Length: 190
Image 1: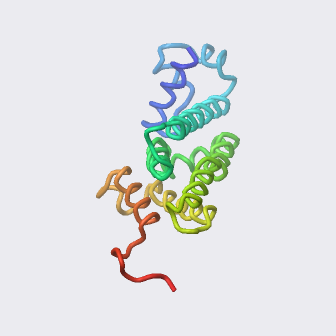
Image 2: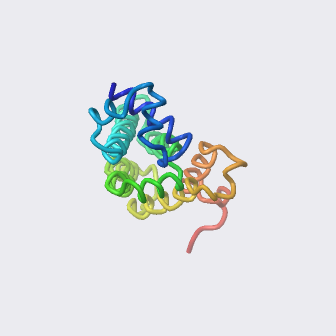
């Protein structure tokens, strides 16, 4: 039943944001609020479970990419930087704001994950540097630039959101961060 509750919660979040009520959830599941509260003592606990499941899915995606022996180290970094945020499409900036406003502890857990869980990417970037696959850049700065870029994509007011898919935007961000904007052999930063 817990899985059904979480699945329906995700559907309601897509439909109504975090403003759905436990009555809405019970009606959608064809059950009573009492049954919901037997599994989750409050809507806050349900939001926390949703965030925990979401983080677990992101970590599993990251593990799958990291352990994929068919990808070289640079391909792994690119796949993580493109694939993981696509998994976050459900959580646009509007929903993140609602999560923060109504379910602060769940938001804090997610925000900490988004800001701090870069160990694998940083490890891979350092491996890329050692293999001379990328220039001698500061990986922490690279990650912060990347986070700043993707934060724009998830902003509900993002001006290009109707012109490109999230995947196209993420691929472009990664392309610019990895390859710059100059043509081969053109201007160098001095």
